[in-house]
Image 1 (tube, rainbow, N blue to C red):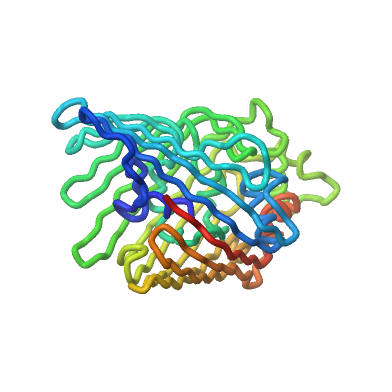
Image 2: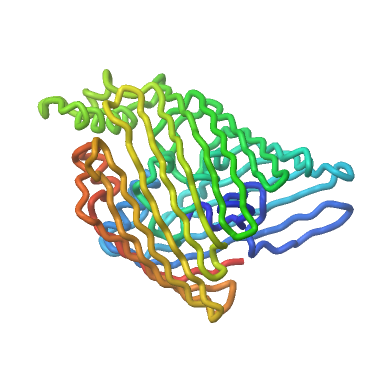
Length: 378
């Protein structure tokens, strides 16, 4: 659901493009301003609400079979600097679920679009690897839990990204600056990512990429230490007499690396779409790599009905620690409105073979989830 809301330019990732429902509200003297957004009302069972709370690191996102309300609002502008250069900017905010606190920033960046010379943007958004990781992201509310790339949440601040599309290829490279409290949990010292992708005339697309993240433990490392302490404690089969937070003080990664290959066919929301992803994650000091396998398919009928299904599995040392089957139905009576229902079913994975008790509880790992709701888009 993270990338689907931005209009697809290639492989479900177009960070500098406007959403398909955006409306131009001002246009004068080579300057244009667009607004866009959505409003959701979604019923969730307890496990889905707990998973959402874990993703947001917030205790106010719902629970115990909740009806959750949310809103998203964005603005985007562009001004012509010269015949071949535009200044661009975009900001998007998420309104909190069922609470009165201030909105959180989802996207906020500025940059230049030099057309055949590429686009450069800086701010909060996706890194270059999102062009690979996003191909199986087809659901409205229930995220795929098996893809470790999204452990930092939807978007990350402090990004600088350059992208160039030429001769049928899309190339991206991004640099991550230091940032604290990412997803309410991680401190990042630095990072970088790249991706290359192409789309053939047959509708078949291919992408490859990698990302590197260097962690920082200088400040505010309590929750971060507990998370990694639980993971390394399970992976290294440490004694239960040591708490997750204590173990994490001396056992945590200095960095992590994601590498992946993505394949897709068709366009999401227009007939048949199929996406497949293989992602491998390495945490420095963890005895084994994490392997992520995902397959997703969606079919949208001309009548506005949509059916979708996805399988995702994360393996550690040959054991499935996350394994889910997700299915969904949706109906678009008009383009701006949809009714949807989604279910995510655990297929018998064993998250306790890698993750600590705190993370399993926060993310409701190993549990089945259900969500149904309505969405208005503008």
